[in-house]
Image 1 (tube, rainbow, N blue to C red):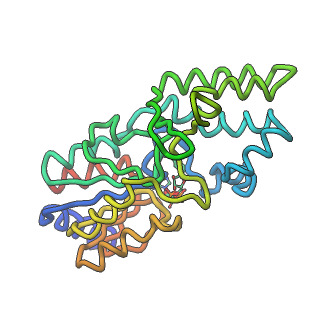
Image 2 (cartoon, rainbow, N blue to C red; image 1 turned 90 degrees about the vertical axis):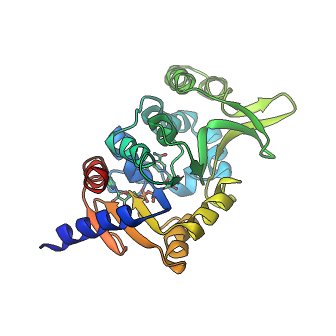
Length: 269
Ligand code: NAD
């Protein structure tokens, strides 16, 4: 038996024997829904440097200095999410909970696990759809259709003579002054604290699982990348599904939208 076949078979055994599974996902699980990852060779950070675009300070300075580039960046981030639907990998994760208790912990901000039907989802880097005050108080949820509208208005802003005020108006429902405070999407940019209570609940879930399935994550973004280590420290086995071989007890190499449905079908028929 090849290493891949042996790992797939061990992964199936691990899922069947599990009493408590954590599925820990990263950008790779949404790649086949058309949402690019950040770090891969065609990822977002190749076009837009994280120094300029991954902090609020850098973003605001870019907005003032080059509003059209600011609009380009927002369109590049928001548009794929605005038009995305769950793929076969998200659906397989949702299907898994019909067979065993599953907690989904995701670094993604795209809402696709919930759209696929997963019921317990901890978004440790927040969500593009959840609008909060600067102090973190909940304001409202945006719909995917509203994000599509923002993208459309950003395109118009790029063509306008006064691009900055038009771009700021375009994103007003997501980011800007509102009521008594400035509001913003609840997403975790570089240097910010993890989203709560999701992060605390994610660590608790990792401490209580006996099998962790990591999917489409380079496991390099700290502190989220600590979760597989936490699971291992309590004796859980770790399955990794990625297009690049990952560090895990059972690494299964391949695109998530093909591997995950096969894994769930083999484990539970
Ligand atoms: P990453 O970009 O660091 O790594 C993605 C991993 O997925 C890589 O190891 C890559 O080889 C793998 N991958 C790519 N396509 C795949 C596929 N079809 N099937 C299986 N694996 C595939 O992603 P990360 O570790 O999640 O960290 C990036 C950070 O950026 C996260 O914190 C996340 O918040 C954010 N992000 C989110 C989204 C989203 O919400 N969809 C998209 C991009 C980035």
